[in-house]
Structures are given as C-alpha cells and as structure tokens.
Length: 376
Image (cartoon, rainbow, N blue to C red; front, side):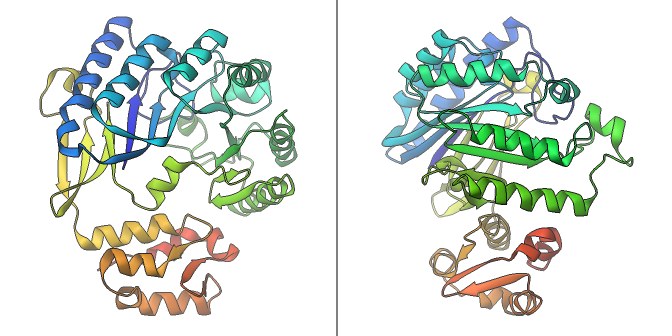
C-alpha cells in the first residue's frame, strides 16, 4: 500500500498548470496542515498493520512549507501507519524553494527521494512557462541537494514547448544527463494545453511549432538520447538509472492500493472484500470546514480491468498475463481475445511468453489502441 499527500501551495501559478494548486495566505496554510494531519489520523484504524511501501508529497510545491511543518506531516504518517523499512519517501520541490538548511532538515526527517521541477534549461523558456526560477538556480538547488545527502533525485522536464526548437529541447535533455553525478531518474512530459490555463488560452487551435508527427519524432529522439546515457525507459514518460525506477509511480501503474490525503487527492483502497475509489473535494473551503469532503465509489470489475490494462500498457515491459489471471481469476483472452489478436496483427502490440506490450507504432497511436480495450 502507498500514501499520497497533496500540498496545494505555490509561490506562483505556472502558465501550463491545471493541477489543484495556487497561492494561499499563511492562515489558510496553517488551517490546511491541521486538517491534513487530522485526515491522516482519521483513516489509520482501517489500515493498521498494512505495510506502506511509499509515501509521496506532491503538489503544488510542498517545499514552500517550512521544513518543520513538512516534518510534522510526515511524523503523523509514521505514528499512524506501518512504513516498510525500505519505504520510498519522496517530496516534490522547485528551485527557489529549497536551501541547504531545508534540504538537510527534509533528509533528517526521513525523505530519501527528491523530485526537482526544472522543465527547461533555457531561461527564456522558463519565463514563457511562468516558472519562478532560472536554470542557474536549478543547478544550485541540485548541487545543494547532493550536499544534503540525497542519493535519489528526479528531474522533471517538458518538451514540445512553443517557445523552443526540437534541437534546443534535445540539447536540454543532454545537459541534464551531464550533471555530476547525473540524476537517478528523469521524467519527460510533452506539453499539453490544458483547458483553463494561460497557455491554453493563448495557443489552443493555433500553431505551437510541434505537429503530432514532430512530437512523435521528438519522443523517440528523447528515448534514444537517454538510452545512450544508460537510462532505462521503463514507462511512457519516465527513465531511470541502475534500476532506480520510482516505486510510487510503478505502484500506480500496477494498481497497488493507495491512500490519498489532502485537497483533490484520490485513493484506491480495499475495504473488506470490496474495492473503492476515493475522491477528496477540490474546494479549499469545503476541505477545511466540511465533514463530507471525501467521496467513495465502489469499483466495478469491468472498471478495474480496464484501468489495469490502460495503466499496464504505459509500462514498457507491458502487462504480465499471469498477474492478470491471478488478480481477476480469468484469462486475458476471456475479455480481450479479438482486440488483442487484431492489434498484434496490425503491428501495434506484441506478445512474448506471458507478456503483452505496445510496439513503437502502438505507442505512437496509443489512444486509439487503448480504445479497443474498453469493455462494453
């Protein structure tokens, strides 16, 4: 089982971001932390004795909070849940929100994995994206994180940005692999114009400089470049060195149970013999003051099967058919014989031993492939 904790606070909202996050006054932050710790404690009884394999602080930018406050939240988790000895404990951060004192405090509190949101090495692009930092400030933050003792660092990057060229973005990725030492993990996401964001309003329906074909070429060029630097491409958008895949993210993609705490946080849990999706409200006032901030819906078998397939095919190794049978007590072909055969015939999927996965051609048109696996 895993735990996700949402910290919705930012110094400034980025122009591409549609996450549940924003700028809030200090009094709201204080009320939020109290409510969050209360929620963490409230659910503990149901899951006492379950081993927690990962804890992930996401946002927003969790490191806008004081390290003592972050430590209090993590301590509430430790006091109420059984963390595995090798539990992966991650926190997201942005350059400009960390220094050596904060990073050492986080390390001492038990965080053993740090994710740094860089997005681009070019200051012009960072300004275009509405980021609060420069590339030089990222380099300082990265170096400081190493000095603080972090041995497992992820760097987030965005590609297909209207202000960039393909050559610039590939050079940016290459520069990150040349950090000393290089990050253990790199996440590379193609920019999506999300409705309601500043960039959506500026560019939706207009030429962004990257067609679908150009984005696909950039995707495979990114994979080639990172493989040349010994990164394993283990999930559509994620790469790691030396088996340092993100335990928390793999848990999502293999449908491990997880608890979600905080504003807009979701969860996937088993209670008795039934499985449920949990959804916290995205309304701050409701989260702080209402007892009905969390909704639960029972997961149907067909929904669970579809999600298992959709998420599993994000992994480059694909879906283990033996795992499928163990989980659902029936063969994969009982549900998907015809679409599986058709997609293999069309060169969009492969089957080897007990594994099925997308081919490169299948990845390029993954949305249409996945549409074949929607159950009626």
